[in-house]
Image (tube, rainbow, N blue to C red):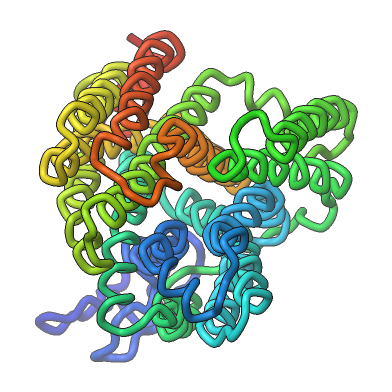
Length: 493
């Protein structure tokens, strides 16, 4: 037997150390392994995802300044918000499928590059057409990047670590929406509305450098052979886009307007056609059976409900603070700080709770807190009480976000990680659009009357409380009673 000489402190085993995978190159003294850390990769991808989530709400409090600077008509102003959501939600499933076929890291970088360049276009806009084009391209970039980034996380983490990583991701889904309102208020007041978009440019450029260094590339050997279901992609994009368009239109024209009813009816027809087509396709974009899995269906519902309550609440409350209580953009942003903290705290508490109590209990408790918080905002409409109520609601919504991601994605295989991620994120966008539509229509004249008071928004918060209570009843039946064990498995109770 050959004796291996060692020097004190040395870790070398000899001139040609081996590993189970074969020979290992000798290490130069004083150097360390360059293998990227999974948690470092998660941090970089999380920063990229946070940019996308922020852009859903960061424009809210900047809209008045944007409208004045670019001389936007009243009919054009809502589209500064909604063109981003429309393209993001409509193209999400297509982005997730492309990520599964051609490589998640590659698509993450492409989507991030498109998002960063279009953010610059928004910041330099001199008229409505240029701004809306930039916002639409931002949505395209986000739709390519978001499911790809989450799919990358799914391949990097397994077992108990996957649950922790999904906890981080779900915190971004809720906390990022709240932080967007805060950041939008601070940037608009202190630097000007253009920085709401321009701040993405240096951050995006830095992430384009960091992601290839931190995230390992993974080979996709059978990607091209599987192909892409283009007819299915066109149908699901058109159907989701039509649904979001119809929901967006509710706030300004109501539920009975032709411009609302027609897109929603068209969306239903397109989705039915899509389901029939996918059932017969040899290589479907979305296996319809995936939606029949209880865990995926439950996670999608929880994402729809949680996002609707959170984004709808932000929309109505920021409108109330600015127009009924005459808060400045900066004050609106700062007022939402407790809501942001509560969302993050709720997500963290939910992630911990899921290893001790089953998912059904966490979901029902979270939505119950949301109902109670909305009830407080409805009955005590002064700013302090309204923010306190929304903070309590956000605590429950944060826990619900974690449950939604955990239910939908914990058992996802690598080959469908991008598609499942896209499915959950599509319901995130549909939920945001639906929440704004329902609560803004409930507020009714409160959004267009010149002289506003706090009680004008009480009806919207009452509807939100009722919606959260109804979601509690549905979650109690739909969400499976599974426990995420510390080992990463799930056990049915």
